[in-house]
Image 1 (cartoon, one colour):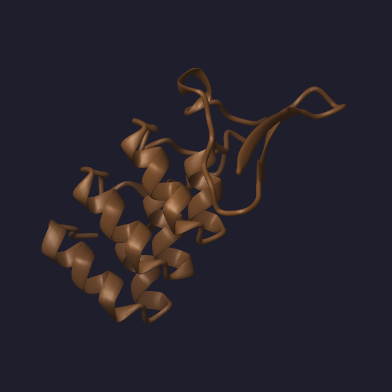
Image 2 (image 1 turned 90 degrees about the horizontal axis):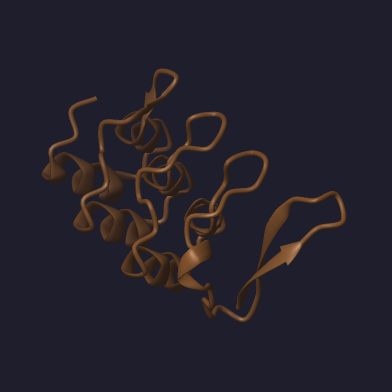
Length: 126
C-alpha cells in the first residue's frame, strides 16, 4: 500500500508496503523535498504494479526530481522491463536527459538489452 504520511520534519513521504497502490487523485503527483513523486519511487524500487496503477491514475510520467531523474530514466537504469514498457506505452518522453544521461544511454551502460530494444522501437535516439 502507498500511504502519504506527514513526516515530523514536515515533508510528505510515501510509504510502500504489500504491493497495493492507494493514493487519492489530489496526491498522485505530490513531491517530497527532493521532488520525488510516487511514480519515481515505484520505478526506483521496481514496484511494477504500483507504477502501472500510478500511470493509469494519470501520474506525471515525465516528472523530474531535483537531479533530473524521470521514472523512465530510473526504470531503465535499474532494469525494470515492465515499468519501462508501461511508461513508453503511456507516452513517456524517451529522449529526456539527466545531465548527459538518457534512458537509452543508461540502459546501454547497464547492458539491459530488452530495455534498449523497447526504447529504440519507441524512437529513442539519444
